Length: 297
Length: 243
Image (tube, rainbow over all chains, first blue to last red; front, side, top):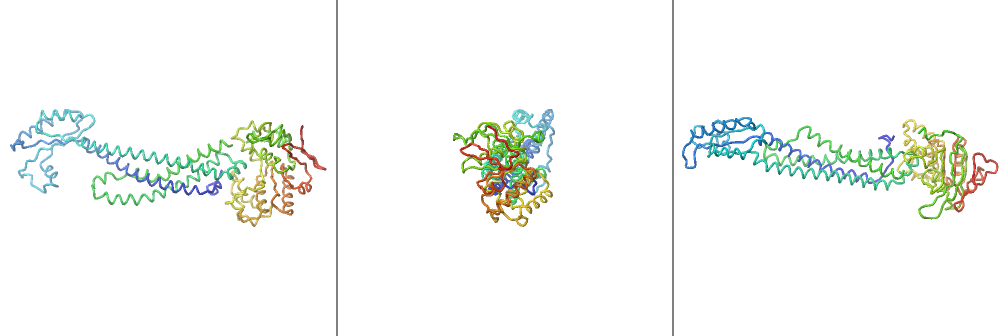
């Protein structure tokens, strides 16, 4: 078997092409995979913490400005009782005046809870099984229990965003598949053209008694090294771009930005892209060389 | 590998039976070739250009399949050997080409070491063996030189060193002295004679009549695709021609 130190004596310019090809492919793969994993995190966060809840507002003043604080308190109790009978509901919490004041603080500033403002009663409902909870049915029931109350399901307004992100992820998956296919096909043609260039060497090796598997192995190891190196270059080129994107995205929404941050496992997936490129080149080259030489054995 | 080894060392190294060869739809290059070469024999192959010398050698080093007839190498009918096992036979055969076929991007040492690396020998053993052999062919100081910087004679000796380093059972040489002067031709012939004494079966295709006279071994003469035996004047051991 040929050692790494003394590999098969193949020598042609196609190796350089392979390095730059895998560098470009890895560069694109790192960027879009990072984006895709970030989106996965955002979608996961939304699914976990936002879509599994809904907010109910019960106004304390009606449309004519009449105070119905007592009625609202009664409506809240009726709604709470109704909700707690539903298996899909995990908990119902009625927000205190202080909590409501905190919520409106960004728009209205610091205020005393005693200030006479028509603040609605707010109920935070956590769902154990969001899929099992029919929001439409609940809205119908709510209009009967408390005609002035309004329910706001985060899942509904988030579903549009989630669908969008899922769509983008599908596009990314498609691009990644294309990248893998393009890389594989290019490696196949690079290898075939290299085999033609190396036909003189290959026929010599064959006459000396080299086994097809050994030639294919040595050839693919050579391509593994080139593709791995190319993948590393792609990774190195991609990191400054990711850093620039980080700088630009950070001020937009701090919480969203933090949610999209990648975990150690996800970073590991990004960091092994050069290895994946190498393995892809290794496998593709091995099969191409093996099949090609087998026919001429 | 064992099943392709000699089961009987008395079997001919090469045995051609009614072998014909033609390329595609062209005329027959070799017609009804019949001969066998005993182990340790030494033969020349002669003939005009285009007589089929190289084709005959290609059949022997398994680079070409005969159009018809039976070829046995080391007692094995090669048509019965699976393609994936042919490498085992090829490892017992070495070839010296007229155009050397050295790899330009390898130095003399690595060119000679190539067959041993294919065989999977350890680098330490390869180094010892290659250095000894290069010294034997008088190129100890040219080990790190690349073929482009070597003379024709030096390249030829590198090619011979590469062919003999595996101690093959059969050595085929196509015009090994075609590009060297008479003195170098004599030295190369001496190398071949030494190898033959060690048991290697030799087949040398050449135009060089002086070379043939110098050694006085049987000759396979090809003319118009037909093979004719010209026996050695005083020594006919190890050679049989049928039909």
